[in-house]
Length: 610
Image (cartoon, rainbow, N blue to C red; front, side, top):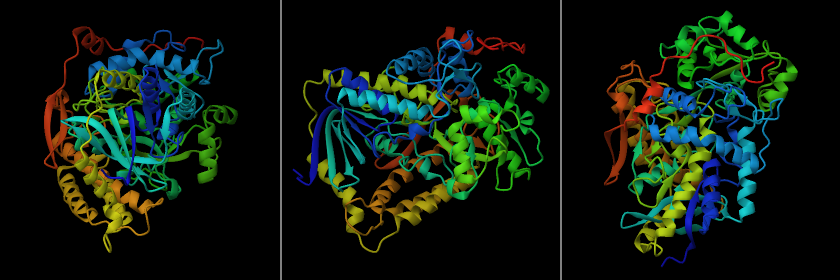
């Protein structure tokens, strides 16, 4: 027995305290099981707070025609039909209830004149569908869930990073990690574990992601025997700040375009009209005059500025490469010429203050300089769509760390409703699983000892590699070679570099002790980022087509055969292995929704419009 490890015992352990983790912990606790919530940062500091635009749910408060079937169709089309149909169906059907539940728990949404929850336009959504709180929706969502979790008395472990999952006979038995502040090793013995750890954006140089996003959940799942799917599907949000460099990549909410903002190149041209793909032309205004008319009619759902994120990001990238970019390598996002200063400050307060304080730009008077930033990964842990359980018994996953819901590209606003819908399901089914177990799983003390040694190894080396230098090399590699546009040659170069970096990372040495030592933490994070980066790169090399967030310059078009396959990643004897698996076919009634006649080009009037 290793007395240096502080031990805890729970029925359900939730790793990650963003929207999915909080909602999972609330549900598990409500089921009457002993529940622990572990967060890498402080409670309330989750990356979810950076989700600004809103929560996508077919409430029908602004457009009465909206319903779950339309939302399902938008999600599937936005994901280029690579989504798991059942996850998209559950999400569309349950999202309205989750939003109303959040309201019951105290969330303060913006309102229509009739007192209903107001909904705004967002890219890829046929109707104004995003319930929002100005441009601070994620913050309000976390505040509400956090208050509810605290009210339930859930045990919370802050500033604690989980390193590896523990297993007994192929099923989960807990997790081991460390307290970031004290440097103590921490073991959580559990019947079930829910991963809600977010993404891996810190492996790229330009990202909207916060420091916590180092791919912990992906690596833990792989090393426990679970499968990942579609790791090549990385979303570059089209609008991140490009200036000053200290905040390059910081998110500029899609709500700016949802509220009337337009994209322009250095020549002042609204360039998105040149990049409308055939897939979306019937739902998009075909000229600027018609788009302007839509703004006057208080809806802009058909302007090409609000095409799905992958389409807009590629268009911006093309304009910059063609020499029509802004002075600092992006393009311009203009809302000042379309909306009053009062409107902008009321609807987009965070954006107003963000640009004023960080860039000295008054967005009520001048355009913003923006460009693509690595924002989200659609790939992740392969889960059962109903229960969220992975291929390892007792291991569940929800939120960005889980895959299947968003296919090849996530629509804006679907992330927050995804967290609520599948966070609840993860907590529910993890609790039910824990209740079915007659006893706690046994702990393998050899596993505990081995993992403890791995965690402490960088502290015991002398004269090794600098983790900060290695991280900089990794982010350069992923940005330059596994970015928006990919080729086989560059992906192979990336794999060579990643392999070299992994060898060097195994020699990382850090100074000082275990009490809040960021160098030690980064040395451990490098292991997870390198494993995830290899999974992304190998998956991108295998998928020989362009679809959604994955664009191959050497295979520039979608391939119908690849559109029916997931790329599956697993570990065998410590080595990354890939295979393909066929997507499940949707039932005929749902396939009919995807093949329905395209909507009329007639301008409709939203419910409650003046």
